[in-house]
Amino acid sequence: MISLLWSVTIVSLIVTLIISVYGIAAKPNLVKKLIALTIFGDTANVLVVLLGYRVIYPVKPPILPVWKESALQSFLNTAVDPLPQALVLTAVVIGMAVNILIAFAIIQIYRIYGTLDVREAGRFLPNLLRRGE
Amino acid sequence: MKGVVSTALLTFVTYIIFTGSITPYDLVTGAVVAIVIGLLVGKFLVENDAKALNPLRWFWSVVYFVWYFLVAEVKAHLDVIGRIITGNFEPGIVKVPLKVKSEYARTLVANSITNTPGTVVVDVDENYLYVNWINVTTENPEEAKKEICEGFEKFAERIFE
Amino acid sequence: MKRLIGLIIILTITLGVAYYVSQNLTPQKSLHPLGKFYLKNSYFGDYSAKSPEAVTSIVWDYRGLDTLFETAVFFIAIIGSLTLFRLSKEQSEEAKQGEPKRELPEPVCAVTKIIVAMILAVSASIALHGQLTPGGGFQGGSALAVAPLLIIAAYSKYALEKNGLDKTRAIIIRSIGLLGIALTALTPLLVKGYFMQNQPIFPGKALGAPLGGSLVYYNLFEYLAVGAGFTAVFLLLSIPEEKFRKFLGVKQ
Image 1: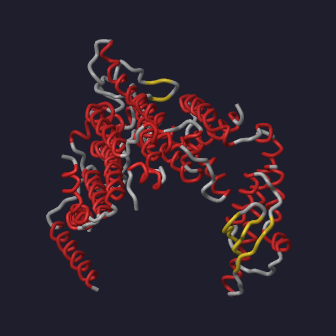
Image 2: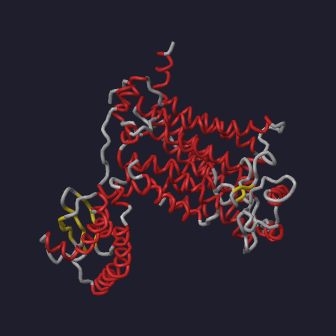
């Protein structure tokens, strides 16, 4: 039963990844592309955190509760792996900053071209390049 | 230097409660953070230091807290429970005049009304609150005030004015 | 109806694949050896960072160089955002012209003032206890950025700019934070250590609590950098649309 729940978690995360990749590629609206991209990033982060999880009953965060040498053994038996969490921690903030950058670009595209549809915005692009000669 | 001490006090208490421990490290960093935040935002929060640090006002706010949660809230809950069971209600929006003038007092009254079940403040202007009331017994502003928020305003006057 | 069929197909495939996979899958019960090393050494041991919080000691000590470069990515992303919305000197002066006013009803604004002071305290607590509890510079900085956002929502951005926190100041605070990180990383070189060395150069314990050596300084500076960086971005985002269209010369 536990292994079924575990595999449902992992497989549904992978399915979410696939759906969000589809969203990035297939949706013409730039805002929808950005939403799909954030879903993609967050799912990847959850997947990485899941790599460090341990399926045992008293499972604890990787923080030493009592600062004594004697508490170390029980801490090692119950704590989860800290490395994936540390990697995700920075990835979340960087992801937020990169999303802000993309959102700014989308806002600027909307202001200049008056559209968010990539097919319509693409039509304006050659004009712009010609003007820049 | 207006409002620094009272804001620093608020910030320090928040810091210690959020941290959840009182080692010397917490106390020192908390004091430094509290003073910095007090200097930064104190002048926007507090207009009169003597008022903010007056123990009598603090006493009244504790009394208000106890009275509000033990008397006003319980009464309103029982009333609303009765109305839910019997189905005896008649909702509508009434105008309620407000006597208190200071910003925090008006906020206290408005939030107290919203937090009791059965009444929600939907808008505020210079002299009136607009309250969505579960059972409109009267549309006269003065009488509605007597039923909705007389107790709140009395205490708000003592605490903030 | 068409959407429902697609949803049902996806759900069935997911559950089917999950059932097939679960027959050969044993959930992970033990630690990876590397994770065990970090847990063992973060507070005791020869390679200790003197911090009971294993995640923070990995972020700023064992894998500090990774984090340094990720901070550089953050720095460049914020710079990119500022560049996309860049304004000339006259234009940014014009963007500041406006009167602070309440944009929401009075009780909301009064509560916002108190909440802002409390958020500042909470974010500082998150950042300064990064070596003891979950939290640290990134999380504290993100919490700090909520405070200017609330002020912008309740009192408009002019209230921030009239009281001295404009875009330039925010960028200066962010640069101070990044400079602090760089200086903390370079300090061990002065006493013949190596780059980003933590113990035993920085004090491991003070005032009755483990400081984690350099971790507390990194967290503090990262807190300033992240909070001020996001504040600068929010200030740019809240420039009214009509003004920006005028600057760009777009008529719509």
